Image 1 (cartoon, rainbow, N blue to C red):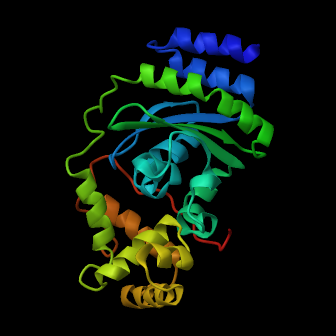
Image 2 (cartoon, one colour):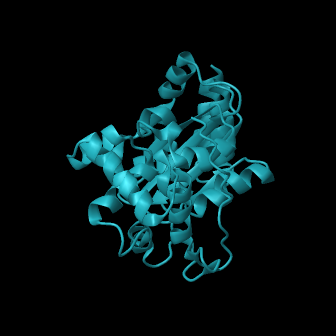
Length: 281
């Protein structure tokens, strides 16, 4: 009965400024959690922060630093590109097989200290996708809580689609040629040094795929993938995924590591704080 009352308040708030708060309050009637963030994704453009209830220090990590480039390796972002059906997903259900050993997790995501993140993936229209993320600091959502949150899906889906059906990208959110910048960032890692296949291995490695998974995706053996990785590290004169991850973020931001300059980064952006890889999985 509490959810039914909350659902009524959510529907009533559609189209008003209070809608995101009403949605978060309603979902907390089903299962307690600590933080909510709602990102809007249009292709590979910089995510739109439609709503969040983080305290300032948390917001810096979860929103501001995330938008600088790490989002490109986020499983929920990748799901928004069409890899997953709309609905409620646990992060671990849509993440690559080595996500928790990958450098995105170790250098960025582990800083969040979250016990679990789950998200409603919502297709608003042919362009805009939403992810309504629910985050917990101390324990994972139980199976019963997940079932209850899935039962709320029809209301969450319909209300969010209705509320944000006319959302437009704000000026500056989608910089011209963003997709090209992303592609160039991956290509610029080892430009003139790495082969096309080696650059594919770089991208899939950064996204958190194991050698076995990369082998299946590229139709080569896992042993060949490992050889490619050794050659990549040798050619780039690096020794860890951490250095590879930093190279990608620097490429996205237009930072020249040799000079510490930014040739292509938009004004006002700064590089995310990357903690030194510790081998944590």
